[in-house]
Length: 88
Image (tube, rainbow, N blue to C red):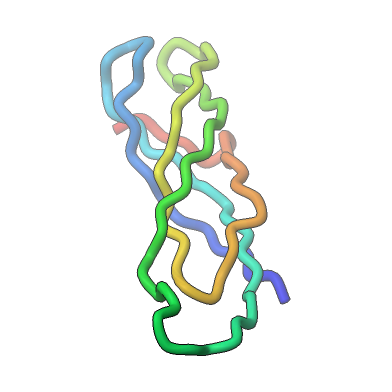
């Protein structure tokens, strides 16, 4: 089973030096683990690099995001919804 959830993120734009808000679509699948003593159930953080568009200058830039990956789930894909970005 895969959950697709949208979440907002604010990024400091390296092009115009302003902050912009973007909408991300994060696809996660649920992973079943055998539970045993000593299993690490802490939240892990994964890094993904994506292309964003500065709404002011209309130029692309790359940014690396650090997203939480909780126990029992795996991030499958992260998409930037550049249609829903707005100036901040």
